[in-house]
Image (cartoon, rainbow, N blue to C red; front, side, top):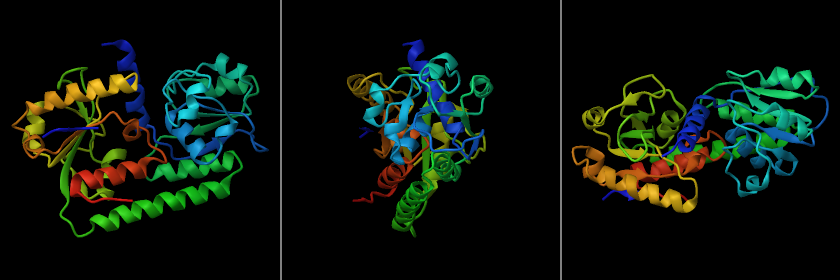
Length: 300
């Protein structure tokens, strides 16, 4: 049994989330920050989630178009995407500090030209999530909170690893993109990527033997690599009801692919949980969920 957890707008959102995986933070470089900022703007979901996890939600005055967690962000002004932040909207919010990703935009220099301080978040890997937490903590003058958060996450990850220790690693395949409503043009997670590294904590090994972080794959490839567990997070919804509808559609699509080992074993998990594609403090929740799907273990 398969379990379950067009439009340009949806494709745009998927693109932003995929790029977010490649842009996991590994540090923050400040331009002349001299005091604790009271008004902060975030241009990326993972930055926003880190700010709130550090107890800085009351200082956040603007977030990216694709920030959805926690619920408090729904009422905050939107400042564009991390690929194309809107400098004019940001400036009108009068921030003391703006967190931005490196990338194909000049937002940092544009904000600096009008006297707005920025913290630059660089690309990285799973381990770099911790560097980001510490960097944001330093920038916002809450380094002690950052260290406590890093300790909590590491402790929980160690518990996941210890829980599955000694069990044979199981092959896992994670789909993070595809053509809407179909199982074509699929984008998977390669070795060395954020989710692949996270799966290792959960007792999994990537079914794909490629270091390309997000390769395009065919159904023939999926059949040949014979994953023990398959996770499909390739299609998000615009609302809870839309997410439920899409999960059901995707589950039915996979049910017909009986040549795929994970389908025959009832080990396909369809989810629209964006925690899978937002590298940040919630990563430990995903590690626990992966361990449950891979080894049927439970966590309190």
